[in-house]
Length: 184
Image: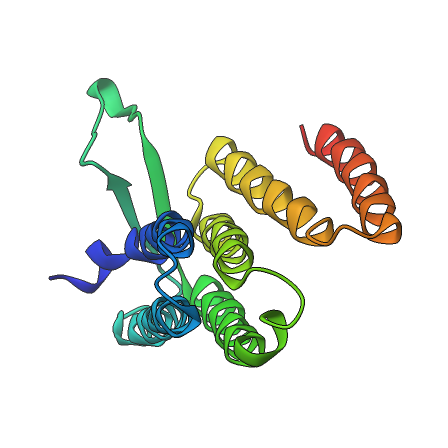
């Protein structure tokens, strides 16, 4: 596989993990299975981010990929455009390394307070959104990925059942909605 064709995996793998983790949680497979899937997904996305260092982008160029191979007529394309340049690689490495550290720290911590399968599911939706924001090749997809990450982060803030957590999440939602309106 060409490295540039692996760009969608930085979004697809966290989304797949986010889909599988609640199923494992419902099946009561055990916390070890949830931690295993979450750890593997985090390690894979971090490894893929570091693997992008192999792209030859030394002259300030970038690599673009239209997901699904949709190349339109007359120079106009439809679909999800992903682009990777030197700064994107730096941001992907940073985001995914921090995400890996958060997942590793969360193994013991989250199980004491809430259901790890549901927490990690929201976490990986947020990670997919953040990776998508970094890789977005156009403004529409940038906004969509930004909203995906934002909605997941609102849910993560409200993940507990205490009044303070729900109030903080509501305030964050209102502030984030106003900010999203300004982005438009």
